[in-house]
Length: 139
Image (cartoon, rainbow, N blue to C red; front, side, top):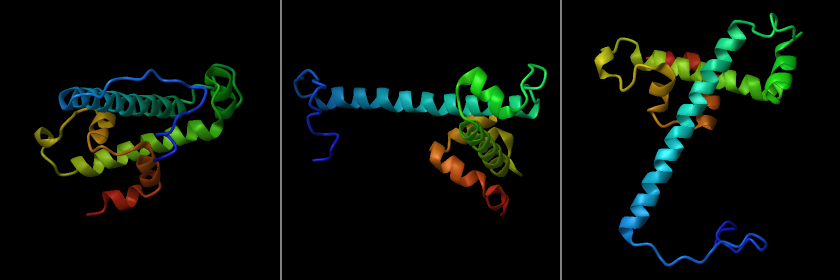
């Protein structure tokens, strides 16, 4: 048994009767939908962070740096903010590579962030790909 399957001591979950296969499929579908929602939210957040960084929004707001802005406004570190920028860049590179020379009617979504997430890449994979955008775009 994995460590997450074992009793967690102080966290007592109610004992439930076993699910039927139909109930288990319904629960799984709900989880799948929630995970897709999270992916879309990450893509939207990354795109907005990218736009804010490109517009240098911290300057008119009186912050001396991107780091100071992110810390004061959102409570996130400079590293976290740049990680979101990396995800946004990777999504853009993937979408550009996928749609290059492709009939637009064949793409699954017109929003670049959502379309890239249609390919079911995890945030970790997007970050890994972000440093290899040139490789992604090569034929």
